[in-house]
Structure formats: C-alpha cells, structure tokens
Image (cartoon, rainbow, N blue to C red):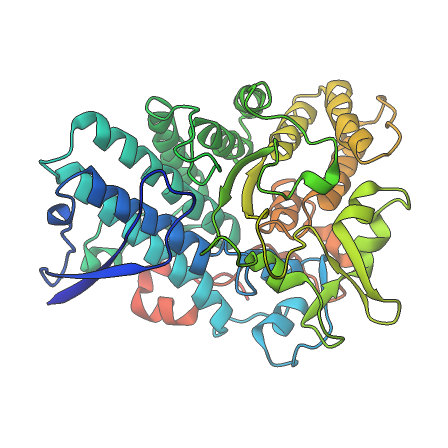
Length: 453
C-alpha cells in the first residue's frame, strides 16, 4: 500500500516557512505508517516538523480562516452575528445552536484534528526510531511534537468531552479505540508537557517566534492545570510566563497584533512575506453583505472609552455594523502574523487561578493592569468571589474576542455558559458539548453513547 507523506522544504534560519512542498512516496504496511526511513538526518526531520506547523496554520481548528474555531465558535457563542449566511449553512446552524451530528462542521473539527494528531504521532515515532539523529536532537524535535499534539487534544476535550486518546499510528487500532474521560486525557497531556519542559529552552529557533519554546509549553501547562482545577499549579506556571523578561505587555494596543509585539509568545508565519493573515481576510468587512459582523452583545459590553474597542474594532457603516480590526492588512502585509498565544493569556490564567484559591484581591490587582492598559478605571478590590469571576469573564471577552474560541472555553471552564441565554435564545445547557460526528459513530461504535442531542 502506498502512503503519501508531505515534507516541506525549509531553509534553516530563513524567516518563515516556505509554501512549496515536496511529495515523497514510501511503501508501507496496510495497518501502520512507518516513517523512520524519512528521518535520515535532522534536516529531513526538521522539514517534517515544519510541515506540522504549516498544517496547523492552513487546515487546523486553530486556523484563522472561516473554518477555524475562532469564527465558528464565535457564531456559536455571542461574538459574531450573520450578515450574509444562507440559513442552511453550518455557520448559520452554529449561530442558531441547532447543531446535529450530521453537520460537516463537526466532521471538519474532528477529522482535521485527528488527521494532524496522526501526523504528529507518525513524526514522533519516526524520530524516535531514527538511527541517524542524535539523542539530544531527538529530544528537541519530539518536545515540539508533544506541544503540538497537546494543543489538539486539549481543544478536543473541551469541544467534545470524552474522546479517543492515542499515540499510535496503527489504523485498525485507532478506529476501534474507546473514548476516555477528559480528566484522564488531561493527565496524559500534563505528563507530556512536563517532559517537554526538561528539553525546551526559552530561545526562539527563529527571530519571529514561529516555533514553540519553553514559555509556550509553560502557558499550555498552566491552561492544563486550570482545566484540572489544580489552581496552585496553574498559578505557578502562569507566573513563570509573566515573569519571563523576554515578554511584556504592549502598552500601545495598536501594536499588540503586529509581528514584533513584545507580548507575543508564539505566532504562525504567513505563506509568503506579503500575504495577509487568514484573520484579516476572514473578519475585515469589504462589502456590505459580508459573512458576519461583531455581535451587538459584544459591542455593548465595551465601555465607551475602552481602547480595545477603539483600536480593535471598526465600523463598516452604522446600518451594517462593525467588524474585528485586530489584524488590519489585507494586502502588502509586512508586519502581521497569526498570533496563537500572547502574554495576556497568562494574566487571565493567573487571575482565574487566584480567584479559585480565594485570593480575589490579588486577582483584581492583575485584572486592573489589563483594564488600565485599555484606558479604563480600576475595579474595587472588595469584590466577592462570584462577582470577581463574572468581571474576569467580561474582561476576557473584550480582550480575546475571536481568538481561537477563548470565549467558549472560558465560559465552559467556569460553568458560566448559561450566560449566553441572555443573547442566544436557543442556547441550552446541552450545547456545552458538541455531538460526535455521525460518521465517526458508524466507524467506531466505541464512541457511543452519543452526547444527548
């Protein structure tokens, strides 16, 4: 049986990833992909790793295009409203919260994620088995693979709940594997991240933060501990990121989404040096019947003098509405890349961790740093725990709108998805979990029982 592996050609030290790809065909067994022969040296292994980053940018749930969770879950929650979406499209169905297991959007979320996990597993196995790569080089390559794999799994459990977890490339095994509880998945991911921290450094392999490093792994581990409700550990790792001298908050909000931002931990290169980011192409309204606009609910949440509204949103017209203007370059783009993680998220992880440890006053002091940066007055530090949670969620909403479904993940993690009922009349408690795609249930009956939809 022939399997096709796509290996990106890269030039070490060049800015960004090259968009050209070389196809290599390898004879493989019918039930397992074996790629150790691909990794004859570090150069070929690095090319394969670069391809995993390209896949994340181009076709994953983290892509900034209209199929990514940023816009799709923005419609599902309360960040976007349709302008010109036919009522039968998946995006319109998401907006109306009437999703069913047959919808293609679910297959896209599921299949692309597991396809990329399969590629990562193949990469890790191939590097591990290589006889031509030094043990030190193997550890570095595998550590990056672990971080990428964790990102997919950590999102999948928040979207679907219990899921299959595998590190194998055995196709027959993977199509019959049973789902496991999110807590068990999170524990597996925690162990992977702890391993990566022993290997990764804070150095960036590129000058533009195109690759994950130790700070990125620390941030993801802090998020992992937040999901596990291990708030003391989430606090420790969030502080490590915040105290890192390599990063600092941008006081000028117009610089936050530029590719030289001091607050950026990790961003994805564009396919070439002048092309617009997917986010700019996706969200900037260029005609009156654009796909969607920022929701009235989101816009009304901003105080009138909030610099985030002034800098990060733009009105198309009073009659049509406003759109996200975080990314601004449609053409001749030379100073924007798609940001995956920025320092502000560490602040909000710490704020949440402190609140749930009954340290509301300290949490509010960090929240006020975010508000002051946005030109807003400080909050009183005598808020109750419940009020502090609500204020945190409102500030996070205004800070991270349309950034990789953080609104959905924040509300869910804090058991506050019911707040969506204020602006989403169809919202029900069961919408906290997306249903497994029907085709996957047919392929793997071990996914049953289906979520109660």
